[in-house]
Amino acid sequence: MRFLAGFFRSMAGRVFLVLLFGSWLAFAFSFWIASGREASHFAQLRGHFAADRIAHWLQLLDALPPRERQTLLPLAAREETRLMLALPPPALDKREIPFLHDRLQEKLGAAIHLQNVRLQEGGCPPDQEEGSCDKARRVVASARLSDGTPATVELLDKPPRRRSPALDRFLVQMAIFAVALALLAGGVAYWVTRPLRRMAKAALSLGRNIAQPPLPEAGPAEVRDASRAFNRMQSQIRRHVEERTGILAAITHDLQTPLTRMRLRLENAPADPQRDKLLQDLEHMGQMVKEGLDLARSLDAPPPSQLLAIDSLVYSVCEDLADAGHKVNCSGESLATVRARPVDLRRCLTNLLTNAVNYGDYADVHIERADKDVLIRIKDGGPGIPADQLERVLDPFVRLETSRSRDTGGTGLGLTIAHNIARGHGGSLALRNGQDGGLEVLLLLPLAEAKP
Image 1 (cartoon, helix red, strand yellow):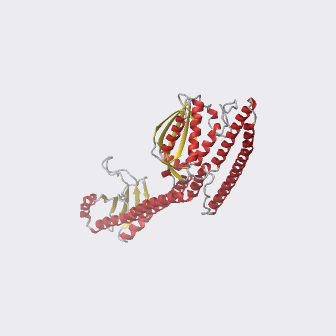
Image 2: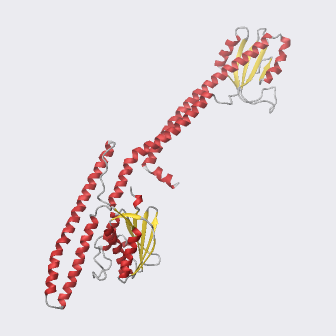
Image 3: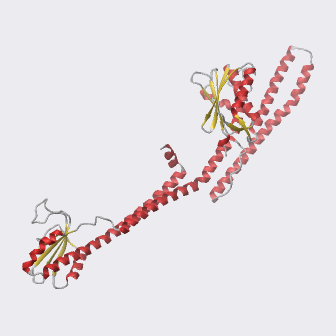
């Protein structure tokens, strides 16, 4: 049901419904017209049949001698026909049938004088009790035989119980055509909305990797124009990002040379408390420059191309931090392979685990498979992050610790670099506070088999 609701809210579903119900309404209208014509044709055939039967009984009565005419009455009753050797009394519930009168007069000829032919609605004749007669409509014809004897024929007017074969064939054809139309409408809806789905997929991929290949500029004029505009937008965004990345990389790279010269000069200077503080500041500045370069590389990294066993990498990073004296516990397995850049992905995991042990005393890592992705959970024992800051801390140079100390606050680039690396691998990085305290980091990476 959820799939159908989503489908009918999509453009493909709406195009499908418009085509399907519009065509079905047209078919229903055509069927109504055809049914009316068919009914009119049936009524005419029934009228001709009734005229032939009435003429048959009147001619039999006229051919028999008067004393033998009573013998026909029970024979006619067996065929649901009532004969009377008298004229019926006038009744208000009867109406004349002109076309049947003309047809019957033509069959009888000039010897039998036809007086009237009327249609009597459901009800019992005057000489029969209620409940003892068939209340179907009756065709009542009154005439005088060639010897002047009055005669009346009442014939049941029953509609045919079975449709004609032509109508049955028409209904079958309508059903087959409706099914074929539903399949055609579905195909048209899929074909019309395929460029939109391709563009939506490209837009989602653009958010993960700016270096996606451009959309093919093919199809109808509107689709070509939209694809061309999308490709132009992607090119402008990529150029803008490359310019910013290039500026950041150039600045951080150029800072390394003067920092190195300052370090050499300070190391050759006489021992002094101020000298030691300056060396510490240079160390921090060098670390900031290094992280700036890492940030630039994470923004402009090539697409991942190497198959990697993710479980081995995660356990290796955890063991390195544990050997360094940090409390790190790793559990679970996915037995999955991802397409990755090993150095960048190791840097992403190292940043996340370092944050966990620095701010939360320990890191509890768990690996599992989630549908077509690998989910890596990293939980720490820290105080967590305010809910309104969970997404903001992924931005560059954002530090929730306000002392600006390198020992407590860092540069504010570690999570940003990890976030960029995750997106560059087609995955995602999300933060949330644990129910029992601490911060939980969710790193999602797509399986190599899931990528086309």
